[in-house]
Amino acid sequence: MTEPTATSPVLDLPEGVEVTGELKPGYEEILSRQALELIATLHRELEPRRQERLAARAEVVRAVSDGADLDFLPETAHIREDDSWRVGEHAPGLVDRRVEMTGPTDRKMTINAMNSGARVWLADQEDANTPMWANVVEGPLNLRDAIAGTISFTSPEGKEYALSTTDQAQLPTIVMRPRGWHLDEKHITVDGQRTSGGLVDFALSMCASAQLQIDAGKGPYFYLPKMEHHLEARIWNDAFNIAQDALGIPRGTIRATCLIETYPAAFQMEEILYELKEHSAGLNAGRWDYLFSIIKTYRTRGEDFVLPDRNAVTMTAPMMRAYTELLVRTCHKRGAHAIGGMAAFIPSKDEEINAAAFDKVRGDKQREANDGFDGSWVAHPGMVETCLEVFDAVLGDKPNQVDNTRADVDVSAADLLAVKNTPGEVTEEGLRGNIEVGIRYLAVWLTGRGAVGINNLMEDAATAEISRSQVWQWIHNGVTLADTGETVTRELVQRLMDEVVAELPGDAADYREATGLFAEMALSEDYADFLTVPAYEAMP
Image (cartoon, rainbow, N blue to C red; front, side):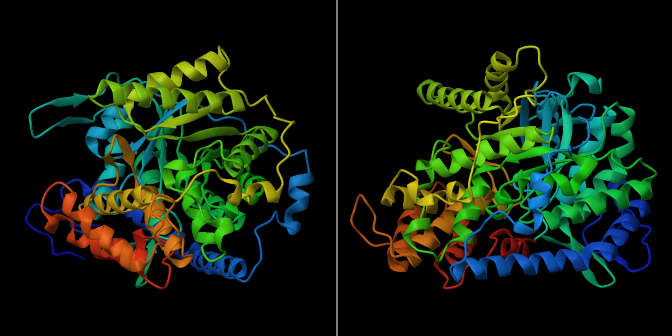
């Protein structure tokens, strides 16, 4: 453990547990003996299964590379065909979810999100955050203070931030998103092994806030990211039961909404709901990571699975319509909420840009509400009212539209796999855009910030993942740019990278590490499953 200073706390460590991150005053309240014991229990019970499932992911990619296609699982057909089962009743604070605000868990953002007027706040310890040690510990600390009504913040400029009310019934319900199964936590080890980043986030949140949330009339709720198989959901369900038993909380108190943001998970939506049983709260259409996963899974399968420019892929593309309609149908068939995707636009000082952005957000949310979604995401408090107005017009006095079972929907595996029917072209403009956004995002990510405003969009890690993955795929499939006629090669990408970095604001040295990391991911012969894994190792 880091040597304590005169003011740093000393932790009460369980046997076999080590903490190597810097300890600041107040950290001991989150890194409590109870929390560290829960982390140790979860690690010892579940780590072998986590590793097994991560290895199984690689097998799926190998099978696809050899010519197999994703499909609905024959061994779980009985779950899909059994019309009798439902998820648990909607939990307190999760009945009406018509607008959900997303954002990282820093202190200022926590206050702004709680004052946003949204029904739910996705408090993000994942893609809109970074796993910098301070964020890992201070995120749960900020959430605890928000639930307790004691949170405040003064900016370096002297501006003060505080909750508009301490009545939790009037504030958004907090739903925390932990890290995915693929990410480790290098600052907390158990028996000499790194722990699961997601289980660390979960355990710290549970021990700091679960009882406070229950006392406030709500509960400990979570968004579960990047799962690729229903057996990964089973591990989470077991983690929930272990934690509830350890803390003396009735089983079923925890609720989880799962992001369907990987290609394999789209074929296992019902099974994922089923595995979480009474802990299920619904599914979310994580559109940006879904596109990243399509590229990752089918990256070697030729032009039938090459997507056009990232900004050209809309939710009206046939494969995306199949994905979202199946999600709504699946959720409502089982009594669960279906939550729509992110509106990444952020308000601008340019009135023309602002008007166009609000029109796009309104149209996007109208499509979702009319398709049967029960709510949707926005990335900025300024977009909450627009989303709310759209869903109010469709829902009226109803808290949701789970009773709209969308029995008209019949989606096949072929519909989900119809990538080649996506309209759009691959252009130099799109290639440059991927390079710019990827490098600019990474430069900020490495400093500890995971939500970055770029070109009037709030970008998170999914953007960087799509950007570098498209570049890799275009190179390895010899794609021809529609606007210049050039073939995408490593040499072309390197030249464009040099040109893009030269035009970025600030000094080129500010982007050196980010440029090197982007080049490593986009230009290498082998494809890295996640950009954030090597980036985490590069992070202090």
